[in-house]
Image (cartoon, rainbow, N blue to C red):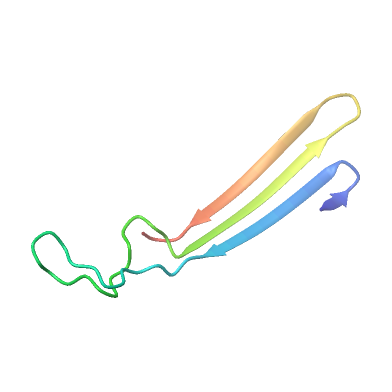
Length: 68
């Protein structure tokens, strides 16, 4: 979305709620309903990009990742 002439902004949010379903570990333990490791529940990204007709440009990016 163009916020000002030459300044673009983007915001995204992702919510993930993944867990094992009907899963048994190698040792026979039942892992049903456990969260899948390495997948965060919340992620938010905010990005700004500025450019000028002369060719000068700059960008700023903020990324928030919730706990794993």
